[in-house]
Length: 500
Image 1 (cartoon, rainbow, N blue to C red):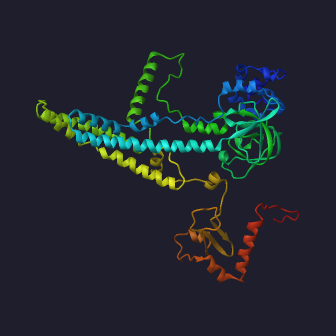
Image 2 (image 1 turned 180 degrees about the vertical axis):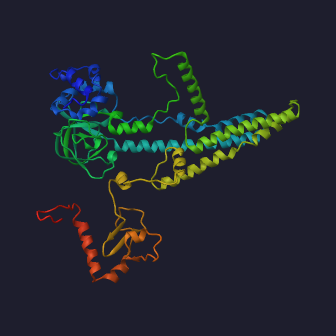
């Protein structure tokens, strides 16, 4: 049963299942490599899985054992609980070429005692940094408040008693109890299920709940969605109750892997991959790449939206041109630079810098963020608005399934009758909003742009007046009745080879 995974087989063979599971120190438990063993836990029988993860299906872990494991594996979170750093937010606003060029400009302006120009540029820089910082800080605070409101918890068995603890304190090996309405705190190997179903739309995109069975066992690796003896972190219980062992926590869970991929590696430090066989040139190359990444981060050319990167390069080009112009002005005076010549050269250079462009862009983004807020969307960073604004088309399947776990029908064709279409609504799941139109055309005729005849639509009230007491209206009534009652209809073949 375990031969398909050599690592899993060796892991089980090396584990002494007769030892006192509570006596296993964290270092030995760490050697089990939960990141590898966890995904394979659906291949292991329940009893061996209980022993493998050092727990007991009646008493669970002891509090001391849980504390040891917590020290080894850390909190059960997706790494999004960091405190808000006002300094890092301000640095993100300052570290781009346009702002840095403006800072250089205001410094030069004050140096030559051009107080008006320096004051205007200072006001522009301060307004830009203040607006961006305030927007991002308020968004982060709002997101933090929403997270605190949810305050997820988990029901575990420790020392033989049920305890309700914060989900972040769940560790591999914990015995978890879940019931209808609960959010599963970690990836669980189910050991007991009672009419148990979970909603995994967050992972698979399917709206229908998945029936789970703790007694299912597999002889080979199968896709995530087919592992019926596992329940996944962040999915919700839609029916029944169950008991399971936490086999994966935090970023090692299936949802955690998605979060890790989304976060990516944003480090600007280039590391040498093979340190044992590395040469001096490898370290020199890594140092050079790190320096280049640092410069790009400070100037804003290494990361960000396409618009932000283009603006940063524009600022760099304009700064270089401004320097050239200043040199040309001084060269025209044979570099006999008096105070008047210096002021003139600097003014010529500063005239190349579009100082108001950055504040116009920031204020525009702030207005956009407020408009999004009116539609119940929190914008954490202006970069998100820039990315959204650059999108021409969004092609997505099952959007209702992904966002709300439900699907709706907007258009229906009834053979022999025609096509009904729901129009003019902003809330798809509110049956009291919108209007219904009817056309006797088929979907093919509606979609055929070369069709000679014009498609005629009438309101639902006109449809009722026109077809009431007719066979077509009876077809409509029968369709409404079947849609209301036969939601789980099946097609099968009886003994007379007739389809039903």
